[in-house]
Length: 580
Ligand code: DQQ
Image 1 (tube, rainbow, N blue to C red):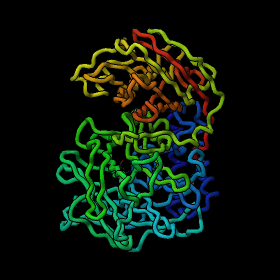
Image 2: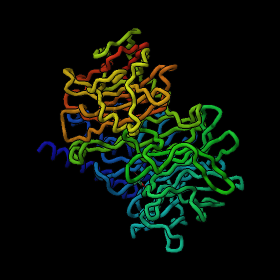
Image 3: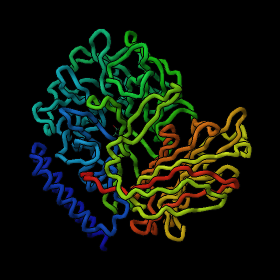
């Protein structure tokens, strides 16, 4: 009964917000929009005892459903994040572009939604898209509208007032829709969405790609334009791959082969490689390839990674979808945003009144090897660190568990490195063990090995009835040592209605010459881990029953037969950010 009344309360507050927007309050001043959001906030705060899973420094709105990050950009020194949002509840529904801004990518101010369904061409939803900074630093948004016939079309919106750094009001182009599926262009009306940030070619013309599929061949359809309004479809897609299904939220951008810096989206040249990322609707995973892009012929040839095989490269081997990058011209870096969905049931989402979190924005660059990308949480997040705790350099014997106390373990940042001396004792890797996720689920944290499992037990309850284990194992491969990184959720909660899939990735680090490093960001229901300085990342959602707030503990463990050195472990409590 209590649950029902809090749900009704929440729905009522959501309807207030929806009505105010529909009545034209999309142009409300920020102050007014805040008061509307405060209504929602009150609802959530009043039930805070029932809200142990809300994050403290990962971005999320006060309530309701959020999915893809949309149109991230920096304008006049202000960072903008738009996101797919259902005004009416914590389940998927008609989408608007909700909008928040920040000066540091850590603390966020909510604004009224920037783009809401209002016209024939987007009446059934304003779906994902991207921002492009045009000449004279003018931002423009291309987004997918779902029209009255439920066809997907591409539309343009521009700021009403360029002198407003918060870009509160957006105006839809009178020429919309700009790109449509027709019998002539043979594009399927339900598989044509999510325009990327556009880039300029050597001829001065704009190019953009849009996710699609044709008979299960996933593809990135190319369009060109001189004026950003009139777009012509290219004869061939930028890239396609058989039997990969629908490609959602493509992202295409250059990376420097010389230095770990970001590049503006239109840059190309001898020391530049290109990344094509696609979000595969079938598996709900983001895959990327690294290759070369010929901007004259508009062709892309991938060299590393593969979209059509399980061994393809992924940004993250856990929950991480519909990601999108932008070039931060202020700090010369490329920043990656992504949606982390729930592992809880839809009923639980309705009870808690919200669904969906954004991962911590990550800086991303090309690894020295040129074979993969590296990702690291934006430096700004470190300003939330407080109460640092360090463990002295020590050896952890096989079977040992050591508590790291003195921090808020449900809201923390932990960095640890491991050193393994007797590598010859590593277990032999069976050549058929090619699927890291499968290997991690077969050899979870409780399965004793030789070199490993060793790592962190996070979100652990006092008696260890609940914990999430993030760990490494080292194997002897054919001519090198192979490092496996796992995030094992099988013991994360005594509530069995949650998805507790174990995730895994191979980590391209040579334990003969390098220490194995692990950083884990813990935020109540999110465990976001970076192995080898960001070479492999795994994000998990967890909903413990016992290990909540002060009942949460952090441990370092070694369940292998051999001892492991821990030269360094630092952990911090994280302060709460203003996440909306
Ligand atoms: N989410 C949007 C679509 C996109 C999908 C709708 C990916 O535009 O393809 O909310 O999560």
